[in-house]
Image (tube, rainbow, N blue to C red):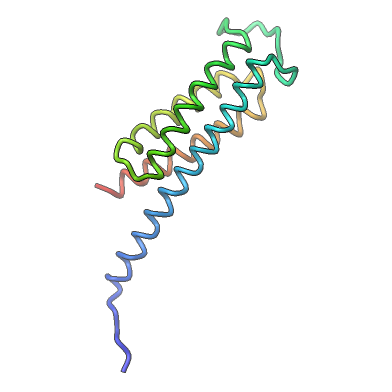
Length: 139
């Protein structure tokens, strides 16, 4: 005879796997975004010729200053990603906050390196979505 399991028990295990997968996705994506920001920061601090310079831009920050901003945001993002992957409660809220800061930073950095800024901005939005989904599911 076969044992019949209720659909409800199956739903709980499936939702647990989805939650674990979403958390892992958010943590790995935030770590990836943080590494991108760190690399972007190092390139900008080194005044690499990749970036557009000499713009008359609303924000009077030079590329080196933007490099330091990206480097700091990246390091904080990497630490936060470790917290998310370790399933720390503070990691979810801090992850949303640092991904928001990263998205705003890359939006402001658009004139200097449009393609890369859009890529990192999009990844930050995915991180925010995944973490908000997790927080919503936890309630």
